[in-house]
Length: 547
Image (cartoon, rainbow, N blue to C red; front, top):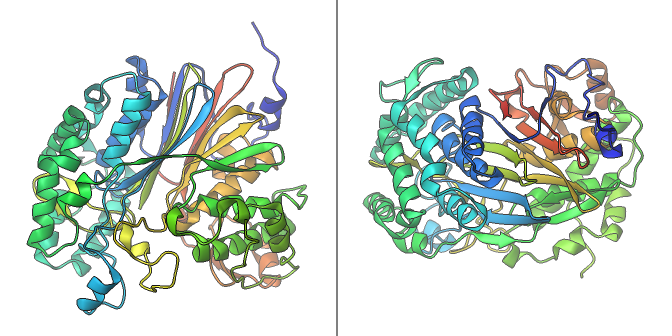
């Protein structure tokens, strides 16, 4: 039976009929289930769970846990996570980012003679939220026991797996950097775990971590209780005390992830959804709010690119000034996303590049994955240790690499994002989701530090304004605002457009490689046929697994 294409299917180019020159491969189609992420083995782990009777939520947990093993360069058990979950006609948000330990404060750092937060070591370590995210998602929405869901990750950690090429590249780079910078005895466990032969494993070489496997098994069997209130918490506490760190078992015991109401803006008839602060998804929404008041006929023009860049600069200037733990923000989210404020900020865009300043609204390393199943459930999930391997600390005997999210705090006591005990920092990782008229289109995301809102903006516009299929929307050459008037473009970015932007006053830098421009995945669902259409990042070892 042939079913007619829906209007949405045509608008979002599900057919892949138009394939631009820069798209390296076609999208993947399926109906019963799909998993898209940055590592083929992790995508297959999620698919394995779907085929065993799990739903999209189980598959997302399985994929996330597996990524801590097969892509430790970007995330780990000791990191944070966020999720957007579509199930039973509703979109749910989960904020599983952790706060600063109770002992960590501006005063405590000043007492140690510190004028800024270091990148590595115990100072920037915040409470990990990822294991709690897995347990919370499983408990509320999962179908299979957590022991079954984490089994593929445990298997890869125990038996080992061969490294993929891009993974090996980033692993080698991290080892080189850490050897030069991390010389204290507290970092020895990281080298024992990730450079056991004194070097990084090569592409195709087998790497395993029995300690990592044992920790995942303990998390699965205790539904993460051991990590927060058991033997694993005791090990984290002991390690921190040994090296005068701040995090304690009491911080872990007090932690729980938070179910939150997602935030959105309507962009040309589609609702674009993000997690509310402390994440930076608000930046994407503010930029889209500015841009929806401008018409765009073509993607590859200097007018389109100039307005995109100027909008993201304005949104980031507001984000850096106003985004923090939501309990500490001075302005309400609805004020920052108001039509009045968007119009005020839109008016600042001129024909030439500007250096933006924050406005005053009217008062009123990361991995990404997405999953879908045949029952309509869909998940947008992101997880990270930050800056690659995170703090450079591995809890002895556990394989737990601790994150360094505290680095994003400021020591300015008057700033909304000032360091304080029990406070969440400004967070870079953000999952995205798209709906239309209350019907789910699907999850999307782009990992990569402050590139993420910029990647979200470019993917959304590639999809809605320029009708690119998921794979082409990901493959399109990207730009990245750095600071001031400085914008980096990929090596494949059209030279004539880079030159035209430079003539508008943008300080254009051509990057030598595409590694800093984010890595994303997309799954769209045809609302009439239920057909899934997915794309995976070609800038990494990305893959779509489906059936």
